[in-house]
Amino acid sequence: MNTIPIPSISPARMPRRGASTLVTVLLVLVLGLLLAGGCGVSKYNTLVSEQETVEQCWRETLNMYKRRADLVPQLVETVKGASNFEKETLTQLTEARASVGRIQLPENLADDPAKLKAFLEAQQGLSSALSRLLAVAENYPELKSVGAFRDLQSQLEGTENRIAVARSDYIDAVREYNTAVRRFPNSLIASLFGFERMPQLEIEDSVTETPKIDFGG
Image 1 (cartoon, rainbow, N blue to C red):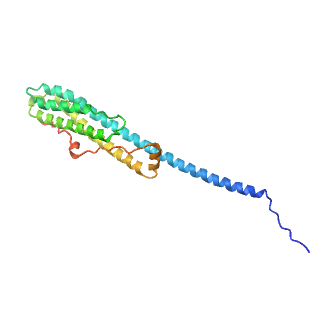
Image 2: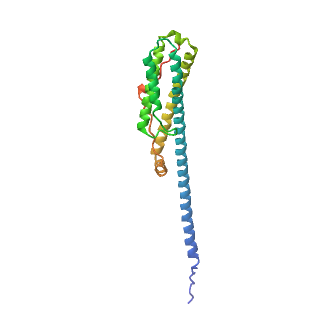
Image 3: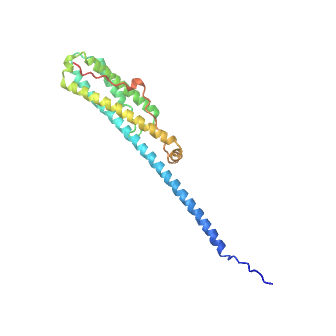
């Protein structure tokens, strides 16, 4: 009776198949980690970029506020030359400028909501004082004829416009950054690397009003 030979399975083949499967699994895991890592790096870089934009907008806002504050002493000295000019108006403007100078905020980021609110209120006080002085100046034709006064009016008008633009840019940048921080999976990266939400410029209608500067005769 003839027997049918049964093919034997080499024991050496089984470990090779197992090793091949293990390598495949490892490759898949490594590829997944690389993809996840690449996504994480991309999200991190996006948050860094948006944070830098906020910082740049904040510095520009501070620069414009500082420029306005620097013009005030020149305006006061020019107005003092007008006979019988209302001293109370000059005093209010000088005190408003001093109030602004007493509030110090970081040049990089406004990270304290309470200080930011106080800062904005002080800036609004300065805007109101400037508005009153320029309104009173309309009653002094000899002052309006002074070239230095007209030049300061022009500079203040330009500065107020730039302040409005800088504030708007900062508000938009903070809104985009805060939204990015809250979105998933950005929120995981933000939590891991310490990206926190930033305080927004809560500007009321009265705060957005700028001094009315009249170049009429």
